[in-house]
Image 1 (cartoon, rainbow, N blue to C red):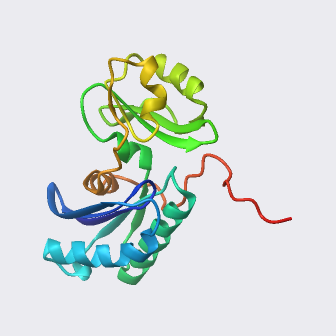
Image 2: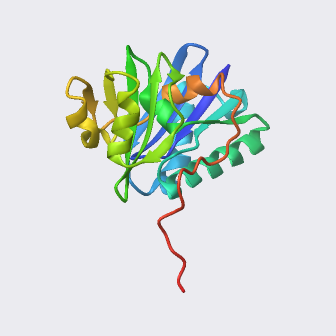
Length: 206
């Protein structure tokens, strides 16, 4: 199955095209804002690099959060629009699952959500060990501690948990791999709908 993935939830804008177990093309650029301006061009570049036509795509996978409210809406709107134009399914992939990736042992995806909170979820061999949550760092530490010593903590919130888990490898610069997003999309039945773990920071004027 030829799948294109889109991720704009965290600190990157990423696209990949995979065909079964093969990666045909992937592009990822660090980006805190400006996803909307770059995403369309990046998708065209990735499809061209994959050596296929848009009409050959069979499914779209898009990260649905948690993450930047603006970023995840940009990715979702684009992916749903592309899916409608191509008449192919568009499915959702959790950004924390994609961030955790693959590897040995318990892997924790941890994103600094500000306001003294982190978005956190732990996995082992791709299986979720807890639901995604927005927690204070100390509460996240307690929840993860019940699961055992993590092998890796990935994401911008990793330094906030580092003292509690000195033996875990840390990667605070990690972002979801678009190839992982595409492979998760191959088996996802989740709708392409935003996953909000708390209300937005923006406040309407009085």
